[in-house]
Amino acid sequence: MNSDSSWYVMYTAPRAEKKVEKRLEEKGVEAYLPMIEEVRQWSDRKKKVQRPLFNGYIFVRSQKSRLWEALQVQGAVKFVNFSGDHAVVRDAEIEAIKRVVETGVAVEVETTHIEEGQQVKIIGGPLQGFEGECIQKGNQDFFIIRVPSIAQTVMVNIPIKFLEIIS
Image (cartoon, rainbow, N blue to C red; front, side, top):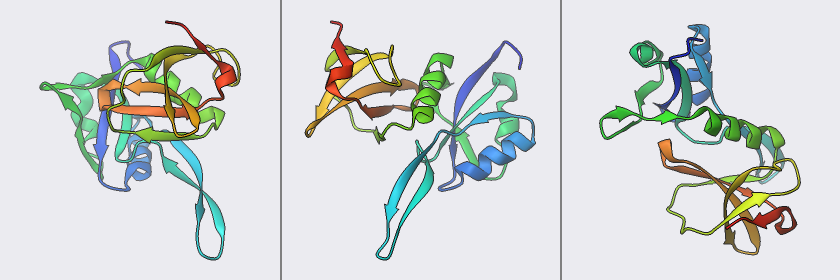
């Protein structure tokens, strides 16, 4: 991909994320849809299902001048904008999301504002080396990875023994 391409955030029609990703890739457009597995409980059974980490969002890597092409696929709605400019996601943020998804740790997405907590570094486990914010929620400790370009926060349950306060 050309060096002047960036990751942008596309808003999709409800429950169309997987189809949009497939259609974009068929057109040769690089797309990333972070998926997580969760167990759903029905009255008669439990089943593992894959679902998007961020409902209604997909990441698209493109040159800014070619974003309109990505919007031509069925199910694409628009690109997320802030102050009249397209929201850009840094490569490091995409890599952090990929790493969280690949480790399979328990995640939940929190869209409400979270009060500033202590800055921490993960010193053990599959996410060792990540730095971020620690908050407490109930009886568990969560590690925060913010994705400011879509005003989303990924919260990962990390045992306290793997966290070290850095400030």
